[in-house]
Image 1: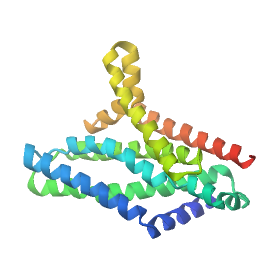
Image 2: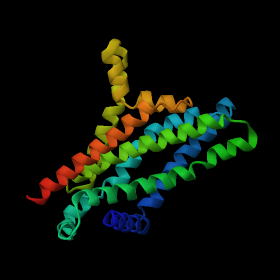
Image 3: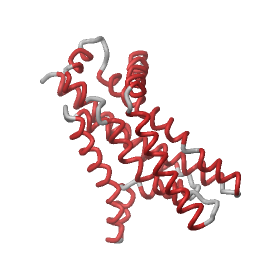
Length: 236
């Protein structure tokens, strides 16, 4: 586990030395800020962040793609992945280390977004329970999407291709919610697999252990697949 922590520190330094962390934070907060002002403040005049957190559920898709696109793709392109694999380190430690670094950056940006409920508290009385569970849902959703980004980056040596794979996969998952129009068990299954059911529950202040287990299961399965991809590439 010490090796995973070392890789996490290495990746965090790389993220904050490059403009990636600052660009992601700026555009993320800019979009949320504009939406917060025109929808929450100007249009509805309500101490409610439900709409803002709903947008966040989609905004974390491009965030996950941008944060993770370089993780393995850039190292494979530059050849440094071969050097990394010569160290006495397990493939799962490499994957976990890179994943944790990306997740910590996402959590940092999400913490910056807490300024919106704090601002709302100064002028109204929002439902703090729903706000906290909503941000918890946004964190778990982002954690699952970042895991998909790690897998996408492990599949190619081109960062742009990795980002496109991640975007297509995640938007495809979210669009499964449209399958709910089919109705019946099939529609419910599509809706559940799209993360819409779990995220909506948390936006409404409900934390269901089944939703949390589903998200963690997705993360574990996706990272496990990324480890297997790295192992296959090691022997090519």
